[in-house]
Length: 561
Image 1 (cartoon, rainbow, N blue to C red):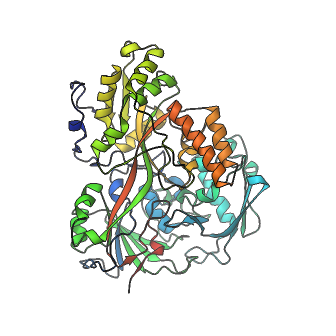
Image 2: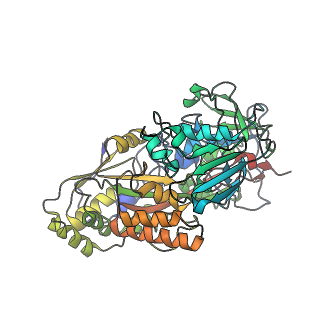
Image 3: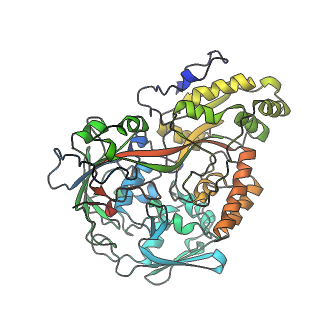
């Protein structure tokens, strides 16, 4: 662990030097914490580089020259290597971005973040929202020609809730009847509300209405795999002869990347681009490699994007999109001192979060709630903590620590954010409390969150399906496996229940607004920044916009003729 470098700095000194954007080697410059798909994230130290962006620029922009590339390859994309080839075993955005090309779910998202049919041609909601029936497309098959049936869907989802080895994102399915008990080893598979009705219908029974579930079905975790998926698919190395349900078949993998070939049996028809090299490492910087014509698409950081936008050659090939991700601080609310809402309020109100974010990155998108902008139904209100140092000191005094006297030392553990040092300094100056900031490598950090949750921590969360439930219900509802801080509030839970029970968008948005107002008041978490993605893409590459999952769908791309 790295100790915060400035515990003894003058608390009255200006904040600007702490937020200049300078970072230690290996950290993410001007990005903050890594943006992750879900809680048990495998380390994605380069994830900000591997985010994706929507197309901008002019149609007449020059096409990047093609340089040296592997024989027979039509397109070279830059992305992450998977931590596992098994969708039930992943929880990080980097793995999801490549597995989404290989495995398909019942639904998917378009570039406007709207849920669309994929392996399922339709779905029907009955029983007041307690039953959802998916009807599969006729004639769908894995890449080896084996028909995909409802049984494959059931088996794939049961792998996600395997009591002996649950998925990092098993929480997506906990609203299904019997799933919590099954995960706890207290129910049989027959008591779980996931079943096949013939070969083409999947019936899902919920313990409460789940209007959000068609969106959740698009999560890469719930993609459909063969019932005899090889055991070695659980690892990071490609099993031989893998039969897949997605647009591309992975045919080889080495230290440089993965070769993907178009799936002749893909439900939407053979993808337009036949062979794609998915690079997982670069010998030179992404901008230089792109400029040389050796790659066709590469995510970049905002620091590079700031100057590339004015470059006459690269500027028209720059693409930007909102990442549907939020960065936030959280508290362990199950033990002192943060089991007291007044102390959480004091910490939230003492810091001018908007100012710190703006000083860290003038182009940053300041968070107004836990639900990122661009997600429908999240509401348009500002649910961020108010900046009120006087009220913060009063709340701390009311909790028994006037002027910070007697307050215990608190440890803030993060994988490294641009705000940590400034937050420590503000809390000392405004409240008189001592916070020790520690930085851990990301893999160690995620293990620490599970095994010994820090008193205070920071994390990023990226939509595994673009719906407010993914950021509110999944992260903060009582008993959710992804509720790191252990917070519980019956009024919040009731608001989440009300949102899940209705299909009326206005009623649902009002319920989520109620939930967010409770979060704003009780402060189990402090959202501070939304993320954005930047990429360079050759200008004749069409369809390389991100979906609502923040992932480029390779099967939807083509080269302009």
